[in-house]
Length: 430
Image 1 (cartoon, helix red, strand yellow):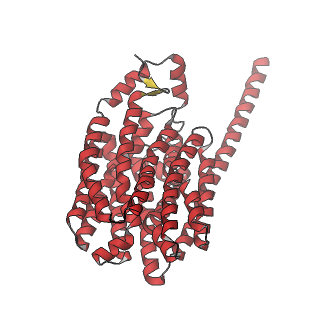
Image 2 (cartoon, rainbow, N blue to C red):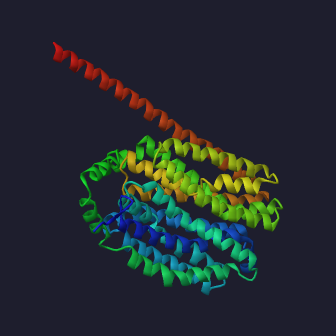
Image 3 (cartoon, rainbow, N blue to C red):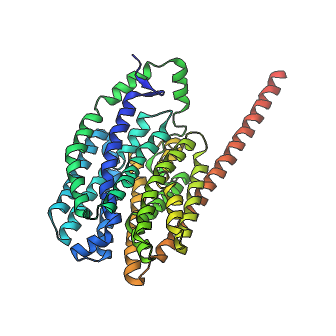
């Protein structure tokens, strides 16, 4: 019986579908914090700086948990770690639903939900393990889950004005219990790895050779060498940049538009367009990253972000739409792209992935903090947007520099190989 679909194990696609459902549900909390910042501030009687602090605490705890989670994935497998993360996330959301007090909100969302970061590396490690031929596209499809949720949820809450942030958190809590736990338990099977190995051993010789060609070309590095490798420095900074960008957008974008006196209908349209472009962009970049040099694709990605933040800084009439298109198309591909590069060039594992995600979360923390403090002290977000532009420029230059270095090393290797072949040919003739 054929156990492969599109040259990949059928269990890989089933697992991808399970992870997609979990990501879709997770969009509710993300939407609540992005869209209802003003309402949360009014209902709980707290400042936007306090909300930013809760957001930043969530990211900080998640960041600190990421390397530990990567180690646990290597030791115990992703399913157990995912279940533990789901427990933490559901408990935190439930506490926010039950309580209506600033301290309860901070503990529930900022602390307990942050512990769910222990599972932040599981999705990536599963994608690296399950897929060989369509790895970037699979990661793009998985990343689209939260964007589809955002695109669906935004019009619903905008059109139904009686729905509030409490309703969104309640729905997230209920779906976590009714859907997330069963999907992890049933969709991420413990025997999945063995079944995949059996399926892969049953493929033809040509398919086996193709799989061998698609294995990571890099060699595993020790933790010390890994931390000092140029590619690690570049990817770590790029992930930090992406985190700061996401902290800017998820925590402050609606407030930025409101401060610029953008009409509510335009804000709703831009947020929905952002979600749609996230889906479109993830599929586009996933397709091209499977076929072309990933370093160049990441250089292009951050170049597009530079243009998007520049328009957001200028606050033109078209800025909400242009930013939604330019940033949305790059939104979900920066993290998978960076981790794919590390996986291929340095054979990164769970611990390395978790450590890199620490930089991403750190950027998100800083982005949220700068946004809240910028508004509280300067009554605007211009400083935050300017920082986004500058670090995107540095990230793009970093990826391009690694690409140039890689090309130079390849030319040197080819030249040395040609010289060696010429010498060997001359010795045989003699």
